[in-house]
Image (cartoon, rainbow, N blue to C red; front, side, top):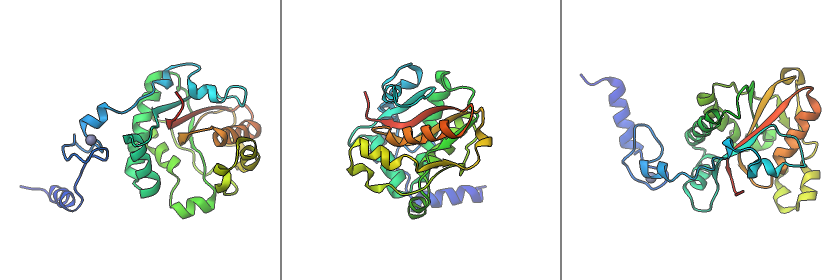
Length: 234
Ligand SMILES: [Zn+2]
């Protein structure tokens, strides 16, 4: 006998064909979002296992991070760019959780990101989160949490104002722009804890730096590590 659940799944497949998000192939292993070929070409950095990797070096002399890593290289027209675009601009939250789960697996296996108490998503301002409908970093955190088994701490580290024009300014101005825009609502929750701050892509690192500075300045005994899905740094 065919179950109702099976019928429903088949019907869903008919109306929402399940194709690889990288190349469009309809031969997919299980519920995977990518075909085996696209999975095999994912540009892993391996940074999580390397001390003084290029992502950690971004913060050298700027702020103190315990460990930092990005799971994938970010390159134009590569599958990773497509997936992050799907997450941020097409609201495909499943993609964010999928990428998070892959990143979490790498972070866990590296052994350099153990003893974490909380995953903290890089906050968006309330206005920006309202407009987008979600915080992509929080979606990624949910995926990381499934493979690392570390809880996500939401709405404790917050962001005050929208700094959309920051990308148009050079670095010195941008620092002034984001500095002071983060806040920790309840520092006691984070006191003495090891947290992993999460974002989707790292470019200059200015925003992650500002958020890290804010946590270090507001919370006694906190240790901050950073992880992003992708980086342009080699
Ligand atoms: Zn594919």
